[in-house]
Length: 85
Image (cartoon, rainbow, N blue to C red; front, side, top):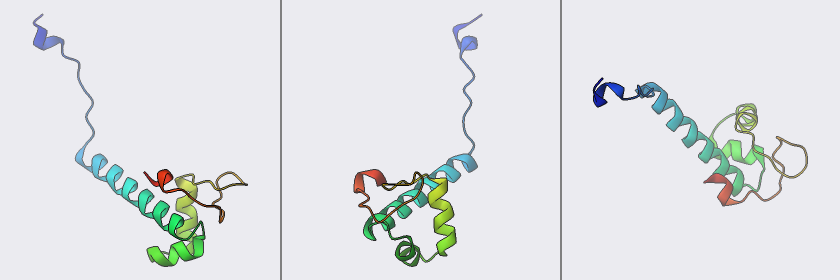
């Protein structure tokens, strides 16, 4: 066998998968920054992002944002900007 034949077959993501990941990351960052700006107030953050409160609530669960207290629940506790990076 030649050395070229021994190359491992790399599984490369499709363009759609790359776009979906980029969109999800941009969404996660926007949500995080909005929550930071509103000090964890989901109602205000939803208004800033122009989405329904329930949509924001479900997305915070999906991205597992956590405040102090109940796991998975964002409270009015300060959300640091480094959490959004």
